[in-house]
Structure formats: structure tokens, C-alpha cells
Length: 323
Image (cartoon, rainbow, N blue to C red; front, side, top):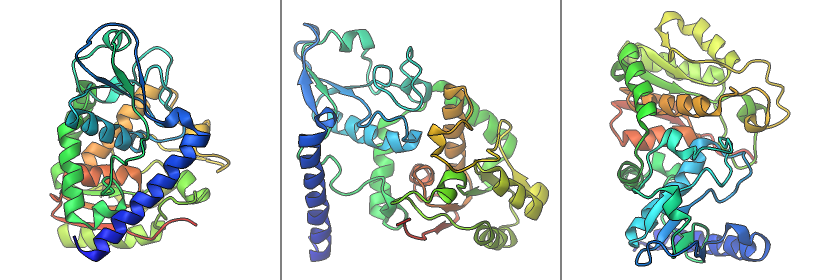
């Protein structure tokens, strides 16, 4: 192994071990643990996968990366995985449904009733040994082909979209002629106003305009725009006119005061299921575009990984992190 790569991996492991020790003493609820709920499936080990942190803040795709790693780890070890977003909270929690299934299929044929009557159950969580030593699903997917390909392989093998989500995607893809579009993704609202520490710096609208013009002049293709920010949409729509395309159900956030993150603000669509499904569908559609121009976020990483190098041309704004 090259010395530089060895140092990076050792440094990553050290940071992980320090964080694990903190959780061991201060947040033992996020550690992996074994429990028995009954006598069913005595010859199997069930891996019950839950969100690590149930604060209702993490976005859908930020949550999914960790759940995906747990699914892959479980199947590698011969465990039977089951994802529970019913008894553990996310921002999509509704108190009655396993909301994971609004977006994705279960990775096994287990039912909730079976899981909570089984003899040998592991609750997912942190262990002293990281399940992601290479840093899959992190920013390096944009620059490291090997990491992107490994991330894409894991995503496609272990995550399967719900029929409802695929139905939305198929309908919109046809209407948009998505395979000919320049996919454009830019975040605004809380990313720009709050500048959350450790998150990716977003390009300005003027920076995005320049790059879109470059792609549009080169390829003469329509623009599929994904943004949550109404001001950004208005600005780009004024600049590019009718070549801007959006999904039929799109809505935008306006008059955002910037006092808190979106998930804790009163500006999001109230129907959590539809909100999440529409967002996921848009990110899948971005992966189907012919070209891509985007900022770095958890969402754009997902589209980029799902596309796995099939864009004919691309540009990712890498502007560092907010301090």
C-alpha cells in the first residue's frame, strides 16, 4: 500500500476510534448492541438497522448512506438485515408507518413482527471497528474513480427504490426527455444563510450562471434544474428562459428567514411522505441526465454515485467547507 494512502487510512481509523470512545462514555445509545425479543429464528442473526441519531435533522440521503453501510455489512457477515424507521425517529417519522418503505424496499423478506419476536438480534450502531474504512459516500467520490465505483456498486446492490418512487421517476423522465438534459443542482436557503460548519460551500448564482452558459453553448441542451430556493429558481429562469425544465410537481421555498435548518423550520411541505419521495425522485432524475453541473451536497453525491461515470460531461463546484 502506498505510504500516503496508508497514512490516510490510519488517520481515518484514529479519528473514528476517538469518536467511538466518546460515544462509549457519552452516547451509548448509538453503539451496536445485542438483544433478544423472543424465540423466533433461533438459527439466524437479525440485524435491525436504525438511524444512528434520532434528532430529526438529517436529510434523507445523509441518513441513507449510513443505513446502506449497515445493510452491506450485515449481508457480508451472513446476518439478515431489516431497516426500521417506524420505531426510531427521522425527519420523516409519522408514528405509524415504517417510513423507510415509502422510499426503499426492505433488504430482506423479514417482517416487523418477525424481527421483534426473534431470538438473536443486533441493533445497528457504532463498533470499535469502522464499517467504512475507505470513506465511501464522502466527497472523494467526485475525484476518486475507484471510490466512486465501489460506492456505486454498493448502492446498486443493496438499495432498491420503492415502486411509488420509480413510478414518479418514470413519468417525469419521459416528460422531461431527461436523457438529453444538462442536470443542474444548487442548494440555497439554510446552506447559504446559515453556512453550517463542516458542510460544503455552495457556489453563488453568478458562478452557476457562468458554468451553465458554458455547457449550454457547448451542447445546446435543455436544463433540468433542481433547487429548493425560490430566489435561485427565479434568477436562473430569468437568465435562461424556456430551456429551464423542472419536474411537474416542483415547489420552491420563499421568504426563508434563516433562523434554523430547513428540517426544523415551518417552510417544508407538510406531507412528509410526498416531500421525501419527490426529493428522492429529483435526485434519481439528475443521475439520468446526459450532463451534470452541481454543487457538493449529500444529495449531489447520491446522484453522482448513482450515475457512476456515465455523464458525457460534468462540472462539480468544489469550494471547500464552511468553517
